[in-house]
Amino acid sequence: MRIVLASSEVAPFAKTGGLADVAGALPKALAKLGHDLRVVLPRYRMVDAAKHRLRPMLASLPVPVAGRTEIAAIWQGEIGPVPVYFVQHDGYYDREALYQTKDGDYPDNAERFAFFSRAVLELSRVLEFIPDVYHCNDWQTGLIPTYLRTTLHGAREFHAAGVLFTVHNLGYQGLFGPEALAAADLGHDLFNPFGIEFYGKVNFLKAGLVFADLITTVSRKYSEEIQTEEFGHGLEGVLRARAKDLHGILNGIDYDEWHPSRDPYIAARFSQNDPAGKAACKADLQRAFGLPERADVPLLAVISRLASQKGMDLVAEALDALPDLDAQFVLLGTGEPVLHQAFEAAKARHGSRIGLKLGFDVGLSHKIEAGADMFLMPSRYEPCGLNQMYSLAYGTVPIVRATGGLDDTIQPFDPATGEGNGFKFAGTTSEALLETVRTAVAVYRQPEEWRRLVKNGMACDFSWDRSAREYEALYQQIVTRRTGKP
Ligand code: ADP
Ligand code: GLC
Image 1 (cartoon, rainbow, N blue to C red):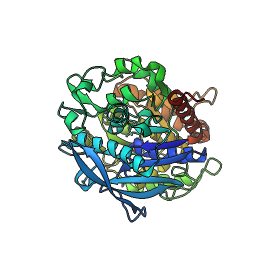
Image 2 (image 1 turned 60 degrees about the vertical axis):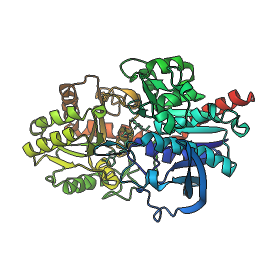
Image 3 (image 1 turned 45 degrees about the vertical axis):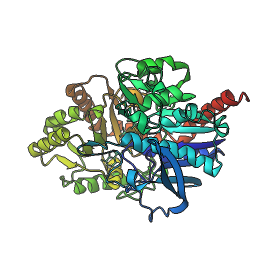
Image 4 (image 1 turned 120 degrees about the horizontal axis):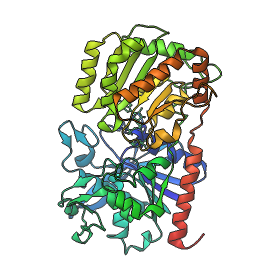
């Protein structure tokens, strides 16, 4: 099949979170299955054209937006065998960050991503690469199915093109004032509850949910959760109405990028059968964070956006227990200023046990996965979560809240049977987290049991092949629906 995957971030070119990892890895897995893929993303300032050897492909692509025509230039690079197209428009994308400054979202985000969505469609016309399925991701691409089924409804070349829309996080919807309709060149007829209106606002994510042929999200558990009021962020009704077309497909992880036997960022290579190098990685990590180099302390870690979704307030509150547990803690993350302050304050109290890097650093994230003993993910909700799977691969034991993809991937360790790959709790308090950390530390102090647990984790296989086959089946379903051909 011919597939165009559109995403606002794609690793290794531009990344703020897990969406980039998925958009960078799934295309490779689909190409292996024999599909003809194209990936499209904006060319942000962050994209290093020299490093990735991008070439100019198309000097001038006219794209209608906000009642006028703006010109994009298209650059080409690749991920493995898959061509990747970068939509260049410096007015929209040559900026410090992808979506916001520290003062908030860019005020023209509706226009920036309406433009991107329309550019994806105009580009496929010019290249005469109209795919069987546009695989769209998150609110930034929600207008692709919208244009296909409204503005471009009469355009014959798009008739058979279907859309799979993947929700990576329902907490980010692309909500804008009604003026976004004009920015997106959409008519007021869509501004109603059955269209893209949402409590008086324009909602790009809802647009994707309404107009796509099929919808997926990134774990089975999250696909169920989001149909409830607790997790639906107000869109549970829309999702329930489309329940038959809504599927959960667990993300895979890219073992080419994330495997301790070949990771270029880490101090020593290791594997399930030859785990010795992990000790050197732990010492290296302690050094990197200026902590005492002790092999015997449990080293707890976090790599995260510092946002309330991730339950980081629970972690900050739990840190006063570190001396009692005789444990160390390292954190790599950036986000809400109150959380930065909470972690700084904890470090001021326990300087010899806490190491902080409040920033974004891909190399350091690999060192942490390799060097830590335990990884904390007490998320309030978690569509999939990748770090618990990276942790398993690196022999680092995940301690997670039982929600979304965390619940689907982590089974609690039972010392009696030796089964399980981590620790899991249900509560939403720092005490619930702490109690589970205490259980984990007790197992850590039993080296035989701990070795077994680590081994179980390293034996897990979350490679993309399986998920890619599930996407393939849904693409096929869409083609059958749109063409009537099996
Ligand atoms: P989300 O996409 O909700 O942030 P995921 O667990 O799916 O959560 O993916 C997060 C990805 O971003 C992982 O690859 C993680 O290592 C990475 N990441 C998060 N924060 C940082 C950071 N401060 N520095 C480097 N990588 C980070
Ligand atoms: C989102 C979710 C995260 C998921 C990622 C990739 O950012 O918050 O749970 O793993 O997308 O699908």
